Length: 243
Image (cartoon, rainbow, N blue to C red; front, side, top):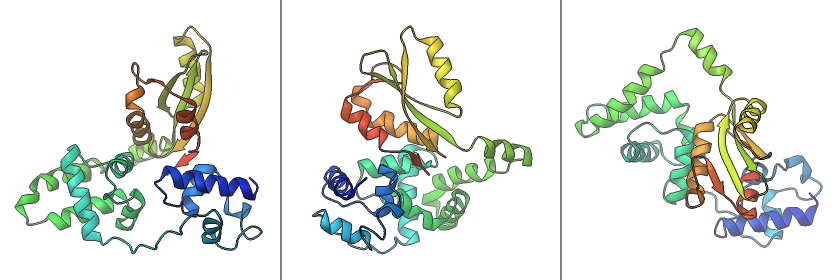
């Protein structure tokens, strides 16, 4: 991208987010543009690029306190009835702007660290017995054999794909660990030619797939098939990796 294209993308993303300018990391995730492509030749600070695009720099927010994040976790656990995966944190943020961004929860540590902190917070308080019970199940199922852990790690990275069927605006959104094999399987299932459009690499394929199914729910036809517009496809293609 040249300078004007970068500025145009900043404006576009800001408009889609209600006027909130994207941070450097979010911009890189959505566009695939690395910092080395704008620093230091175009701008020395990302805030300078934001200002030149005519957007207001984001106001720095202090980190959420652990207790606040744990309370939000508890609210969501009660809402969905299980310990949330990464994708469900993202979806909750999309539907509730008062819910913290999924990245804010990183200060609580790994999934197991978060479970332990929630259990510690709820310990001795009977009103949280339901939460303690759910979290205890997560702790129990995490005690796997070395063989199971190795198998889990080998399947850790997956893909959420977008495939077009024929000449119509029919698209399939699904997940797989092997894109090439999955394309072959779909070709055997369908009478018309399919066209792979885009893949999102992620360590949470189930959560990311769930997000896109939820986002395009009103356009769902049958199963994992959707009637999408050019704008919808462009939105999906902005994401290359989600971790």
